Image (tube, rainbow, N blue to C red; front, side):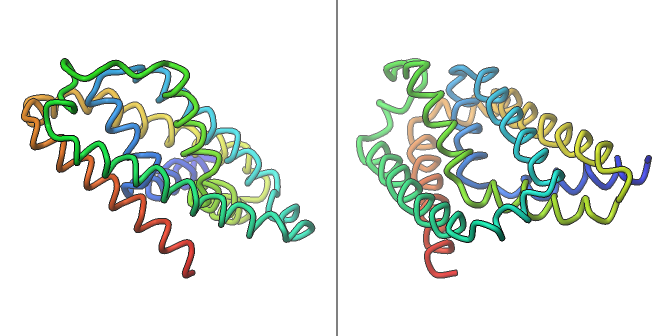
Length: 200
């Protein structure tokens, strides 16, 4: 069981460690200090649900309904292109509009909807949590529950560190130019992931 726990925790951590659409959003909300706990909870709970699907054998379901793959793929591409465009537009507006204390607060509903879309409409999240973790869990037959719980804890610890730890970068992002750079970086990440999905 200990081996399954270690494997689950660190496999999940390594898969979600790379910056992506979901992580970039959590980082941005952490820097803005807006609904950080809510965002972390949504990401962690969503990952736990998806990990459960993977460990329970969602791969078999996707093989039974092959239309799920292209629907998730092109829906994800469209959303990532749209969200990336929003980030580029925010960067073009200039630094003052991006300073947390000066910018207009974003509604809770808007944050929740964006976070849910970046999680549930993101094929990379499904690939990491459902397909890859589901496949790895198959190597721990009889200990899948321990593997899945450990993987969910790995996800929770990562998002907590990313969201609540972002405040330590606040002095850097007190400068409007830093926010412009961040917005451009997030936009590039979104469009790069969209291109990777589209041409894969």
